[in-house]
Length: 268
Image 1 (cartoon, helix red, strand yellow):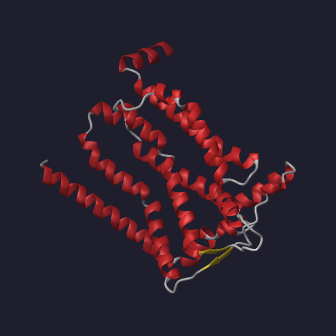
Image 2: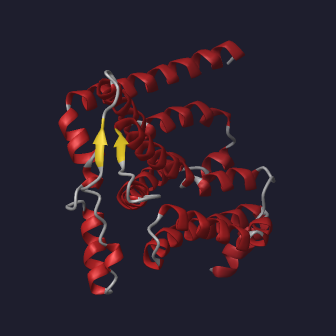
Image 3: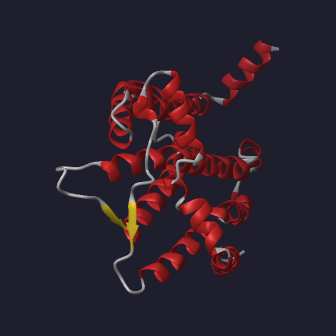
C-alpha cells in the first residue's frame, strides 16, 4: 500500500471510531436520569457501595473517619447553559470511555499488518489487555478514588465561616479527569512493555527508582485520600502492585529470545 492508501485506511478507521462514540453518546443523552442520578451523582449518596462498605469496615476497625458523608455537599449550577453543556460533555465522555475498546481495536487492526509474525504472536491479546486495564482503572477510580477525593476536597474548610458550595462544572471536571486519567495510568504495564521492547527502559532502571516511585505513590495517596492510614493503604497497594507488575514485564521483555527459550526448556 502507498502512503496515501495507508492514510485513507487510517482515516476510515478513525471515522468508524467517531461514529461509535457518537452512537454511544446519543444513547447516553437519551438516558439522562440514569447517567446522572445512578452514575455521576451516585458517589454523593450514603448508599454508594464503596461509601457503605468503608463505613462498615470503619465500624469494625473502630475508625469512624472511614464513614464518609458526601450527602451534605451542595452541587449548584451558576451559568445559564451550565446544565445543558454538562449533559453534552458527559454524554461525549460516556461515548469515549465505553467506546475505548472499539477504538483500540480499530487502531490495532491498522497497525497489525506492519508487524512481523513474531511480533504479532507476542502481542496477541493486546486489544483485550489494553481495554481491560483501562476499564479496570476507571472502575477503580470511580468506586474508590472519587468518593475519597470528593469527601476530602468537598468538606475541607479553611474556616468555619466559609461554606462549601461546589459548582456543577467543578464537580464534573474532578470526576471525569480523575476517572479518565487513572484509567490511562493503569496502561502503565503496556507502556513499559513498548518502552522495554525498543530499549528505552529496563527492569534495572525501574528497580533503581523503586523507592522514589514508592514515595511518590505514597504522597499521591496521601493527597487524594482522607487523613487516615487505612484509606491511604487501599489506594497505595494497587498502584505499587501495578509498578511491580511493570518491572516484571520489563524484565521479561529485556531478556534475549534464546535466554527465554532456555528458561522454558529448563522449566520443562
